[in-house]
Picture 1: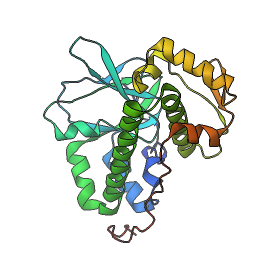
Picture 2: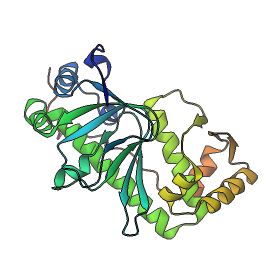
Picture 3: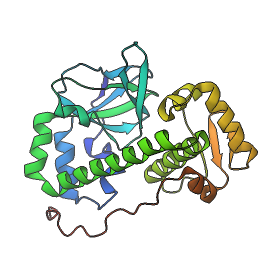
Picture 4: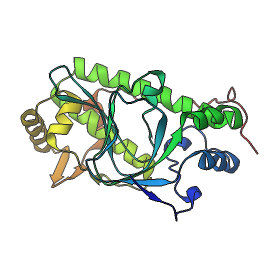
Length: 253
């Protein structure tokens, strides 16, 4: 990894996931910035952390797309998640002696490392911010529950529709003015791996959605032509984030 030592740390703090439930205070963001290491650059297709490594830190994704995957018994790879800017990478494995997943840069990537001792300090120095991160992790669990139901009980068209809608929603969190069209670096094989289909099947399902005038493909760009119909097709329940956060620790002034 290449370190950008000349960039102010406070200007390279990914905030998309931090503000899902409530915006942290400037004091809390300053603490987080002080706990994180400098911005590091990771080349496309380079490994950030391997399955089996000792988890000594988590990573804040500042820029780029990252894949989280595990190695199956036959040596093949199963993609678990596509990480976007604002995500905290590698957090599940801090509960284990050895990392359960491999983190791979899908595109040129920039990230910041938070050591586990520094992460522990967040709970004492900024408990409100730590609680927001905890809430975000629980939301991830709900998303995983919905995805497991989708893969196990729905059609191929439903799975792809659910994936596209979820991806668009996450991109909109990062860039609120994103339109119906977005670019992505994923291959059909990678998409198939995520939703449990072969690459050939993914291509057929993409064509089926195009025939139904639900999407339009152009290279690595996808336009969602009928978002309401795609959401209905996906079968994923509409969920609203908790509004009553009065039980959280108070923000720092």
